[in-house]
Amino acid sequence: MLKITLPIMSMLLMQTWHKSMMSATIIVLIFLHSLMPTSLSSLSTSNSLSMDLMSFILIALTLWITPLIMSASQKIMLLNKSPMVFIMLLTTLTLILVMSFSVNNMFMFYILFEASLIPTLIIILTWGYQPERLQAGMYLMMYTITASLPLLMMMSSLTAHQQDMNMFNMSTSTSNLQPSHWILLNLAFMVKLPMFFTHLWLPKAHVEAPVAGSMVLAAILLKLGGYGMMRVLYMMGPAGGPLKLIVLSLALWGGMITSLICIRQPDLKSLIAYSSVGHMSLVLAGIMTNTPWGVWGALSMMLAHGLLSSALFAAANMMYEHTTSRNLILNKGTMILFPSMSLTWFIMSAANMAAPPSINLMAEIMLISANIATLIISALPLALMSFLAACYSLMMYTNLHHGPSNYTTNFLTSMPTRNLITLYMHTMPVFMLIMCPSFISMW
Image 1: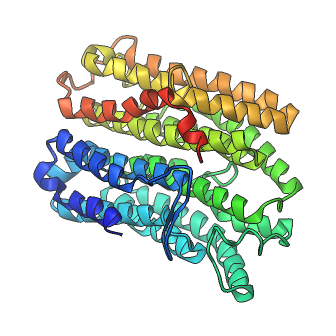
Image 2: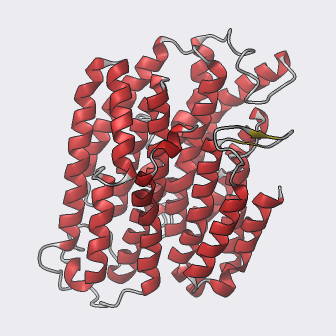
């Protein structure tokens, strides 16, 4: 337990060393090493906590992203009157997320799954930009809590019939469940992921949230949905039947539609938010295939998306702090204003459309192969999703960095080194992990 609590509590000292990214990186790497299981292919268990490779990857992602979130939120911590409240909320949220990925009791996972909403809602309502943040908070709570009620009912029913709620011991006791039970167990995770038709809360929450809220929401909170679905997949086994193919089809066509929406988005944060829906739809489709390549590809995509989406939201906020606008038209020609960020934006845009040598390429190859092997007709939406992802990624880059600069833009050409280091620390693992692709398949 100390392995989990010590690195998180050390983040409370962030206000004293927030100017040193090296200190943050050293602390994270030390405790990531202490969290590493002795054998990544085996399950490390205790009475209440368990860790396999999937848990370790998502805990590592959480502890890697959190210092970068604080580094990107310097304006909040320097100009706000209560920076310690912000740090305490983010630290509490990190602890909840790490515990969510560590517990082996299904009921405890549900409690932590719901508890993660409270710090997120407070961050959005307190440090959000516009009055519409109240509506965004209402959408967030209504969608997620309403969808979680069937999950609570199903877990209460399972608890009444068996004593052990361990996620790794429930596979035999849940083998007689019906497909309707499967959809009730997974509905909360589909909304959290989110699946198309249940995604309306996500763009609103992203647009109105501060940079910390957007980064933690895109990088980690969405992954709770994928993590929960993978655990339920292990528990339920073959249950779900034809419903899995229906959900797979909805995910792929929904991802294609959100990719089309991205092309006509004038708001930068809204574009990144809708691209997250498209990428997570591909994750959902991979999980629904119930094949090794599908699950490995989904885990790889979750890791890559967590790093890249957080980097894109951080970069969008850096530009917003200088230009006070998120509009792609008003922000055109920023290569003249911030030449140091132009290369970083291109690297992130290329990785977002799965260009080599990013881990996104490996994830998309695995997911496309698994989906076509499961349902041959899925080749059409998959091809369109890949093409449209390249379109809106390149359009985002060219609209931002090329063309004449708007004369109303604030010509503050100096970009702090801290901002560039924050983006490099996001993108570096995306390209480094491609050197060991077998790491994911060990799970």
